[in-house]
Length: 194
Image (tube, rainbow, N blue to C red):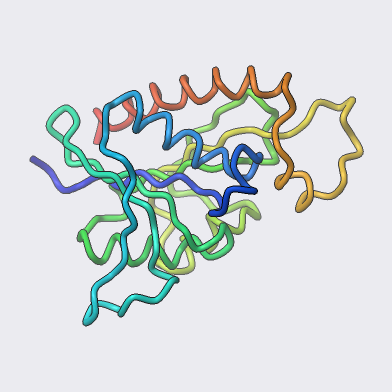
């Protein structure tokens, strides 16, 4: 069995952020967990002597073996812009190489319904991704970028920061469900190549 693969969905904790565009990564991780019968998420908190129990280390995790691979699913609980703090703690604790990390996140540069897989690429202004790059000192990981850009008819939208914290519309939710399914299948395919 190889080293563990860490699959991270980005989003914000707290119930009010559920089903918002910025929590697309969380939604995909939840879908992956359900489809592959992973256990329920539990709070990961570093023990004393390994960084203490500061909130900055918190993440919800679920672990299982899938097709002979040890997989850790994670949802950082540090809020989006500080995602790297939790990721750094997880990779140190589980001794995971950056090349065995998959990050799933929303992307305002891509239209809703589009998925783009990137490897070893810059954050392109995504603060959650930039936080990870800053904390682990590398961009050598795989990213699943999930488009959330609205149709032209929706423009102008009320600033990126407000837009990403809005919930998907009913029409968008139909597309989101399909994209979640496709992303889970794509993650499974990528894992087979690791």
